[in-house]
Length: 151
Image 1 (cartoon, rainbow, N blue to C red):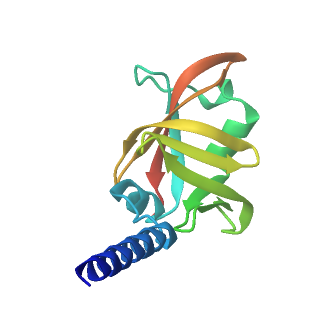
Image 2: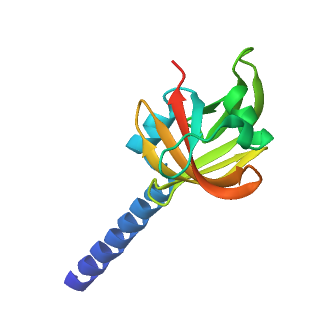
Image 3: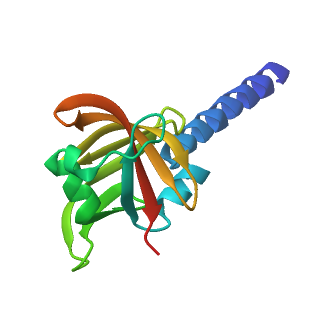
């Protein structure tokens, strides 16, 4: 009788452990502090610098980067959707996805014309700095794209 009771307890324990594991698989991960900051408001590119912090003149940047700076704001949403919004009309002009990966060290963005993995150098409520390699005056160079919140 004791063996039967012990066996029943063991089976019940295994069953409950399996249920807990299934429950964990269905739960969505909680947003990190960086996730929360990123989705607070749209972001507008204010400048592009070299790694030492020196501003790069806009006329030396390619047309895609110029358009990001002069035309669009980037809105990151909680469901990992991102939208490019026209600064003047406030209409959505493009969209895609975003993910913070590598424990928040990399921002993976996929929007037509603005896609890639960008190193997160800084992400606060007042500034976002993303490291990237981009053409500057026709030559690929490591740069920092500086964004500020649109409030």
